[in-house]
Image (cartoon, rainbow, N blue to C red; front, side):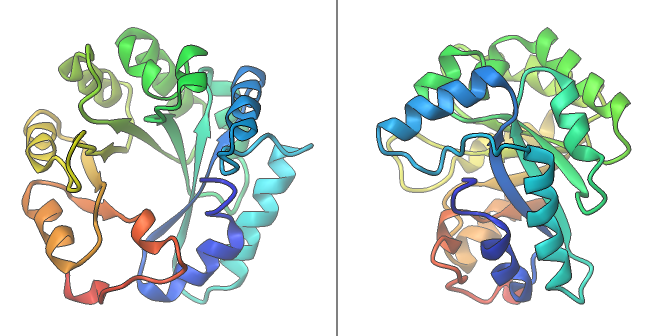
Length: 238
């Protein structure tokens, strides 16, 4: 959520013990910018439109995070793109440690334009995107996907991401109709990949964080539970 999880927000999260703080998602191509505009016009202001100079903007945000920390905290940037070049461009920012390919966003305007979770419908193209990004940058590459999207062949998606050389598979384990994550999906993912799996969705307390890890995730990410600028539980107890 680029309009929310900006440098100021991330800097406020440093003392909670995160290893990695994520900026974005950002629209990195013209088509995703146009889709973002349509989403914003219907009231979802966090679907950030490209800054006049996205590189300078993200550089400033990432520097703000790093300058506010005397800890070894990493900065990740989530990007909506379907070609490697704009992602590689952001990866060259010295303060950015991880670039994340957005293959999870479910907003109709983005999906219709081929972005977000639409990428999972075309594993070969996803492979080319991830492989091109990995080959073109010296930073770590993450791919964020969404669970339970109808019609997706998840085994092919996992194979594409892993074979392309991504360092992380970040899973939004959304379970439609439930207020908890799909932990079974996390278990299935971990059984079918050797990649580092980050579990996401509905982590709101120690119990849900521990459940995500015991289901097979190698790490966890927290989003909406932190949206007010704090974590409502002690992460050191997870």
